[in-house]
Image (tube, rainbow over all chains, first blue to last red; front, top):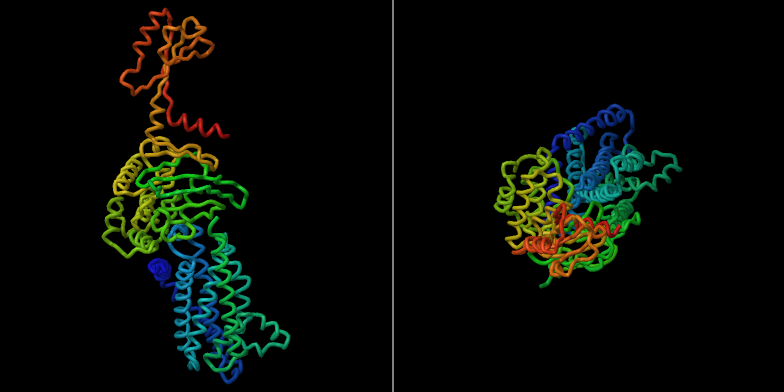
Length: 253
Length: 308
């Protein structure tokens, strides 16, 4: 393993985040606060407790997941797309690094950033609602697994995209709807039976549900299924990345 | 001697169907400066890309100091420093941080003293904490060279290093390349400036339409270039070259009205004086004369146009 290269790329990517520290930290704190003001206080005060959890507390895991998904994808896709766009990718391609090392460093950095964001949002949320985390270990596990999985997914999008529009396309057209419909702000039990069934085809449901279980000990779907689906999506992304590097898809002509 | 780079039957066909490389065979010797000369679109950059790992070859083999670039890519690539043609930079990084990044990428431990030396050699030390985006074009070019040198490569690829560079910087670049060669680094440079190849290279390879047309020592080529021709425009056309002049390398041209004498301008005696004296004796008079010299450019243009 060329660990020095992994470290070099990782630090390079992280320094990009630290250069823009203000927008990296301040903007999620502000948007989370807004969600709490709107959903938690204004609307939430008129919604009954769900499974004995107040609505304000109920949306915390969903909010963290929402940011985790979008930020993981945004960070990872931009991280690999930008050097492709400017041409500096030549250096990584010509360096003695394996594909595993490239993925590890880019995806690792993107996941690190979104995990940090998730924790910042958690801290912000705790200012608004009293929070008790039932299963801290599983909470961290879901946090890390989701960040890694969706950073991989973002990495794939970044490689696939050949223009800035495409970079936005999938997050906007697919990921945002899936996240909003994935039970971030409601329990899928609130839906009519037909839409409950439809929701089960949405992978985000399992992420949010598993994450919520780690907070409150109750969830829409069983924790085993949630964990299994998350791991399955992780495996799928890994398989696609492996294929990309084997064929040089959109990286090497 | 074992070549440091050995290319065998290398082909590259792009997905568009364009054949950029057609069965390239090439050997580069350790410690030499090899100039790859060719017109735009000849395949120079694709060839370099294939050797350095940026382009997936369609078929063929490349080995770098005995390491296959596919199966043993780590060993092969860590020996190579690449300065691509395009000025592509991590615009928002600082010069020193970005050069150090390159060293790390190639798996070498941090060495601030070396980075300092490289930046000083390239007159970039004053700009070490400047963002790359603020550098001038020439500085960016030197910055990219610094990146390629940061991991102490044994082989340096310079893809059109002097394209769009002013005369002074070009001289600096040439000096730098010579210094590198003295430390034992093998240098492969592509160019379409013939004077650059003439000035720098030990050997010259000409590539055109994806094929290597010629590989020759520069000295060998220059010997051919040393040939000059003297053309005499005769007052009365000759039917054949008189017996008295058979000792000279003479040819008749333009229906016998021109007498062409080929000689080596570097020889101690060119034979011109003797020829003119003998012409006088033979009673051949001429009304005008001119000399011409074939340049590398002529040879190059001939080679390239032969294939079209």
